Image 1 (cartoon, rainbow, N blue to C red):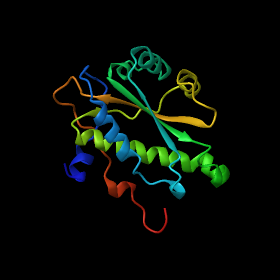
Image 2 (image 1 turned 180 degrees about the vertical axis):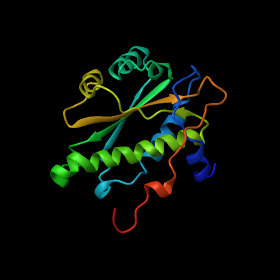
Image 3 (image 1 turned 135 degrees about the vertical axis):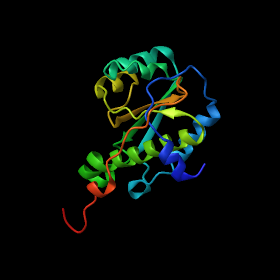
Image 4 (image 1 turned 135 degrees about the horizontal axis):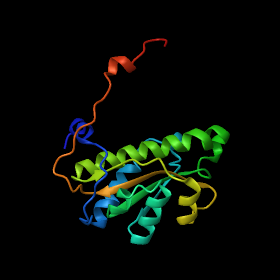
Length: 173
């Protein structure tokens, strides 16, 4: 699939079937996620794959009871690694590792499209509850939950985007 096509086809899905995803597909998606740019090439991001039913249910509760999260066969949690970015000081901990993780998230979303899979970038969750559930060290911060699977629906309505010219400024605001 061409990149432009994957970008246009990508959308947030909140209705998953129980179709399983081969582990090799998940491994390849994460390998490409790790190709995302990172500050100083420190790759200050880590990935957690959750396929355990209890864990998925607990994650959906921690994510404001968004039940669709638990429906997906797999949830990928993308985390910022504060220790790995520590050489950049405060700005690295507060921004660069979040950027590193976010760039990896976008790669995951686009690779999923390439595989004919569906996702949703979930940022609304109780960070402490997720950290506790996943037994994250204090130097690891969960940034995104990504339910990964196949939608139950044959078609989903496309969301509209603002005109780019309304969002674009030249040389100043």
